[in-house]
Figure 1 (tube, helix red, strand yellow):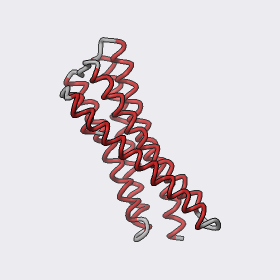
Figure 2 (cartoon, rainbow, N blue to C red):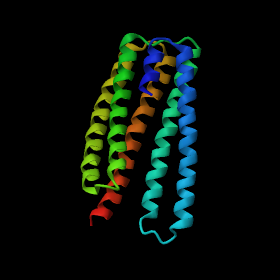
Figure 3 (cartoon, rainbow, N blue to C red):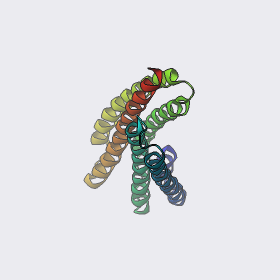
Length: 189
């Protein structure tokens, strides 16, 4: 997704479209995996004590993938219409999307370590929350700078929508980390 903002800033439409197609394929794969996991949890573990917690985590992670796809789709559409952000606006998007990616990477690391070391997973959840706080700060800073920098109202509205989607993604990642913390605490206790 960060690469999508870079391609958008550089007005590389074909590369942006290619990235959107790859992100869409990943999101479709995430949907398939989500369905399979939910089906397996429902069929094979009806008495599994923390099944709902796992399902909630799976659904939130899938929602993150859906937001990435939505952002990429919107970038591709506005790029097709010839919109190229100013360097300041492009840098704002790249910074915020980079921070969201960092937050996601912390969540991914926490998910991967959960089966082997639930205490470490809890520690990594804390890093997700710290990263989300950075996203919040950058979001409000970027939102204000957009108001100052973008003069065309239609561009301002779309850019603010994109920025809001990034913030929503960061919030979903944090919510997923809370679900993961619950699962880790069950394993530690």
